[in-house]
Length: 67
Image (cartoon, rainbow, N blue to C red):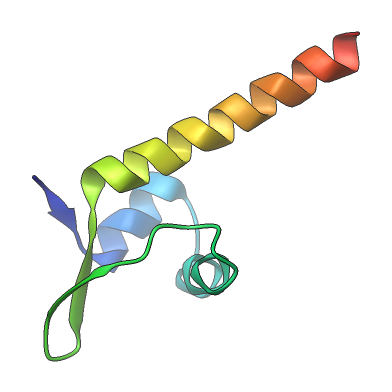
Protein backbone atom coordinates (compact mmCIF):
# COMPACT_ATOMS: atom_id res chain seq x y z
CA UNK A 1 0.00 0.00 0.00
CA UNK A 2 1.38 3.37 -1.02
CA UNK A 3 0.68 6.61 0.84
CA UNK A 4 0.83 10.03 -0.80
CA UNK A 5 1.62 13.34 0.88
CA UNK A 6 -0.47 16.38 -0.04
CA UNK A 7 2.03 17.70 -2.62
CA UNK A 8 1.89 14.41 -4.52
CA UNK A 9 -1.91 14.37 -4.31
CA UNK A 10 -1.95 17.92 -5.68
CA UNK A 11 0.35 16.89 -8.54
CA UNK A 12 -1.61 13.74 -9.45
CA UNK A 13 -5.05 15.39 -9.29
CA UNK A 14 -4.07 18.88 -10.49
CA UNK A 15 -6.09 20.27 -7.57
CA UNK A 16 -4.93 23.07 -5.28
CA UNK A 17 -4.59 22.32 -1.57
CA UNK A 18 -7.68 24.40 -0.60
CA UNK A 19 -9.76 22.59 -3.22
CA UNK A 20 -8.72 19.19 -1.86
CA UNK A 21 -9.80 20.19 1.64
CA UNK A 22 -13.03 21.78 0.35
CA UNK A 23 -13.94 18.57 -1.51
CA UNK A 24 -13.11 16.53 1.62
CA UNK A 25 -15.41 18.71 3.72
CA UNK A 26 -18.21 18.05 1.22
CA UNK A 27 -17.51 14.30 1.25
CA UNK A 28 -16.39 14.42 -2.39
CA UNK A 29 -12.74 13.42 -1.90
CA UNK A 30 -10.96 10.67 0.06
CA UNK A 31 -9.97 11.50 3.61
CA UNK A 32 -6.31 11.25 4.63
CA UNK A 33 -4.78 8.84 7.13
CA UNK A 34 -3.16 10.33 10.22
CA UNK A 35 0.53 9.48 10.50
CA UNK A 36 0.91 11.03 13.94
CA UNK A 37 1.15 14.62 15.03
CA UNK A 38 0.05 16.84 12.17
CA UNK A 39 1.32 14.52 9.43
CA UNK A 40 -1.28 13.01 7.10
CA UNK A 41 -1.18 11.09 3.84
CA UNK A 42 -3.69 9.68 1.39
CA UNK A 43 -3.96 6.06 0.27
CA UNK A 44 -2.81 6.08 -3.37
CA UNK A 45 -5.42 3.50 -4.44
CA UNK A 46 -8.20 5.73 -3.04
CA UNK A 47 -6.89 8.70 -5.03
CA UNK A 48 -6.70 6.54 -8.17
CA UNK A 49 -10.28 5.36 -7.55
CA UNK A 50 -11.43 8.98 -7.15
CA UNK A 51 -9.82 9.91 -10.48
CA UNK A 52 -11.46 6.91 -12.19
CA UNK A 53 -14.82 7.96 -10.71
CA UNK A 54 -14.37 11.46 -12.17
CA UNK A 55 -13.67 9.90 -15.57
CA UNK A 56 -16.71 7.61 -15.31
CA UNK A 57 -18.95 10.57 -14.40
CA UNK A 58 -17.60 12.52 -17.38
CA UNK A 59 -18.22 9.60 -19.73
CA UNK A 60 -21.74 9.09 -18.38
CA UNK A 61 -22.51 12.78 -18.99
CA UNK A 62 -21.20 12.52 -22.56
CA UNK A 63 -23.37 9.46 -23.22
CA UNK A 64 -26.38 11.25 -21.74
CA UNK A 65 -25.75 14.31 -23.93
CA UNK A 66 -25.52 12.13 -27.06
CA UNK A 67 -28.97 10.62 -26.50
